[in-house]
Length: 285
Image (cartoon, rainbow, N blue to C red; front, side):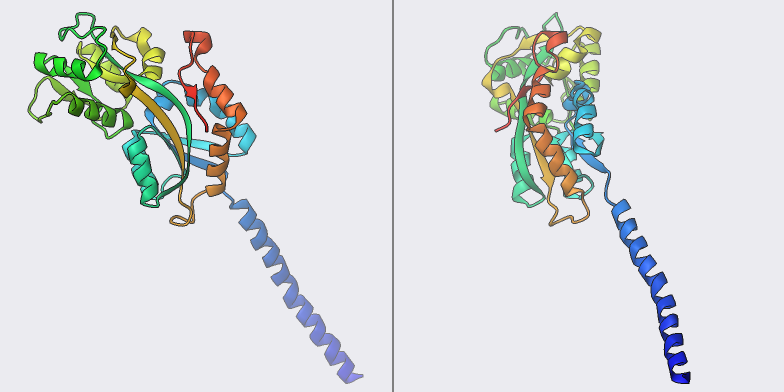
């Protein structure tokens, strides 16, 4: 009888000890579930934000994928640096060469083409370099340099800045730090547009930002249509093998939505009602 009592007592104590443990395991499991990321951190080329495209598509995108998207609007070069540090989950960029290097260096994975538009060379109506309607954009850049007409550059390692530098190179123009006619802002496209307009200077701009902000500025289109002015955008997930803490699931859902039929339709219809043409053309392959 005494042995039986001791056995029952021991079993009872064991049960008491086990119950809190079981509760702790359930609590830990529940805590783990609640710690699942609810946000996708996106670093994007400023044009996607400045044009209003993200403001148009994100409410529907967030509803469909079940994640809130936190946007850092910044030049592509700086967006890639955030990706290289593992500080964002996904990148929307417009510099294919830099994007390819980002992937080759194993910082990014799963790149998909999303959309494209084009760049414009714009300037003051007075057109001091006499480049209006020039068909060859490199010739136009050479004329600006020869005339020492003011040119405002983003100077921020963005996709637009990279394109601009490639056009100076194509024109055979060597930029020097002491050239008074060449001004760098280190800012995004909208602010650079505003500064160029105020200075009656030329600048390179993407069509989406130009159309969505032209009513606030006097600059006009000088050169367009040259095939070198094409401006493609790609979406890239940050590599989860290099940065296990990123929200790869959310990044994947974000990417998949952009290239889905619904995402492509919304991208293609943005701007049509207000400007008579899309600000971006869907390009998922």
